Image 1: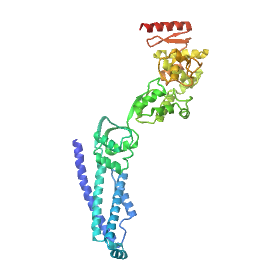
Image 2: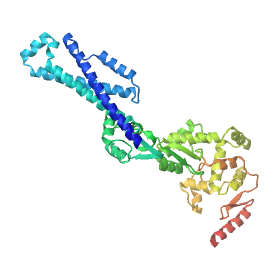
Image 3: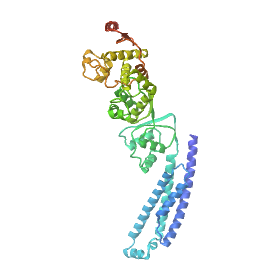
Image 4: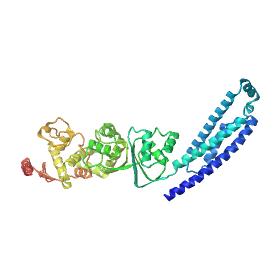
Length: 449
């Protein structure tokens, strides 16, 4: 707090020096104006204006950038022109027609009277005051007065919020120095209509200018850590990103389950189900769904490296087939030690031409995770592995590393069946008779509970 008071006192002293210098500049400009009047020269010269702006930009030491200084001087020159035109018009109107014609015949220097010079002095003083105010505004606006400790301050700008509502919110959260000055600066910089909805974070030292630039950029600077669990479908993943990042879940699903992105990303599948690699990611809030999908697929490619691709060739199955088996293993396995065993069951069934009869494929066909009844086994879908022999058209979820490795390195068994034990694991059987006994044992266990 003491440091802030000291800085503000220094600003007050700087403002006084600025006003003195601007008044001195106005006096010099007035003398030049008088000389131009006598010589019959134009008051304003485009070449001179350009030279003035170039000179001040060359001598600009900061923290104002050249663009800010240029805007200040351009506005001063524009204001001076407007006042000059109004003053000249007032003088012409006040003259009688005969006097005006004589003055015109005598030349423009004769029109400029003592009154005009006085008005010019007022214009210069007004311009000086304007410069002082603009310098004060930009110094206050750009100086990093604010400080946020720890992880910073998170601001959520809702869709449909007006600029006035946003300014009030920022002032209430003590993120800006003064609401009126902030509003004025936003209007001068033409950013008051460019404020975007989203979540933004402000940490460390920051200025009003930093706040305005961030909220008008449309790009959130808030990094959110998102964990995507193994075995989630594209639709479930879309819900996670909608909740955590504000992503449009319908757009996410449409892009991930369409064939265009699979083609662009060189994935051997009709869509990207199965290839959104589950793990923990860091994304900026509001990151477009296409960027999220691309990053997750690239992470899958990074995991499924050349070594694993070579292993897939050794198994005699394609990457696409391996991922379908891995997704079913992911949906079935509850114990890590059983993943390779479950994979062996499905490989054994494929070799014998038996239907996989995997309940998770029925759930995927129904579009929900629910208990599967006998009537559901008759559903007409290419994902019904009870009625169709072979693998489903695509993976049924997005498997994690353990299930992919289990599909690549299955155990060597003769198992063709397995059923839950009721305690998290499964009982595996070689024959259908053994399997029926295991099913009866499972049902008795469920009845006792």
